[in-house]
Length: 335
Image: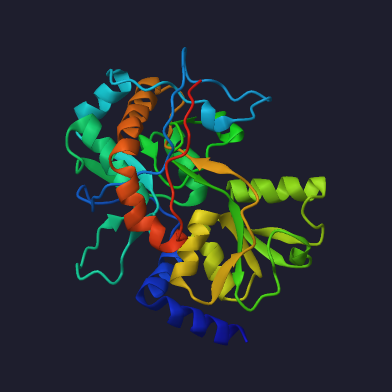
């Protein structure tokens, strides 16, 4: 039964799916990728006005709107930006196997297929603003559970990798203003009797990425009784795409992740689908070191311009074909 599911899933994926399986099983690494990467216009946040003063706020216990905690935009240079310019390139942590977000197209004619996707477009826009050339960038592919350690260990200047802004994470890193709105959702085989984030998850094995907001949500909901007690949420993996591989292998019954990511995975594999509606509201941001206030402000300035010119083009190119909905950048407030 499992063998049939695997063959059917891989057949549905074609070249993209087969490559994704290989990438997912070998994703626990951090490789410096070529300076020159694919480029495009993109944007995923919602414009708005806000007021900010002081330095990056600390995530207090009463934090309720983490997406509103970033610093006001500024075009001024500071020590962090000067260091990046002296180095000559921007170091950005990204994903290389999230379809339409940050991935290498295995069907590309190029022997060295370049990274492409919505997050990759944004990273190029930031490099273009800071260094005057969108190609002065070095990508490092990092798994989901290494995003914060990569920033804290000074392996990257920032992470642009479908990273949700949360109160917990604000204690460890700083975030830009939000550039995309999404929510947690259930992904399961089309033949499954799972209907969504409800009692149909009883006695089902659910996979999430370690340290992800999906894992945090499931843990908290099971403790509070919002998630049925018999749901098995013990399966966690270093990289989010590994969950889809587990699902294809029949090792789990469902995956919980951001709906925007799940939609891209469903587009790759016609044997799975989103079940039910999103059950949280979350926002992606660019993550940076907590003391890099000048860099945070500069990235926020890039986002102000990008929401006006770039965001929509990138969304329509990369995400609209899989999400199949019109979208605009999320609303923005500053601390």
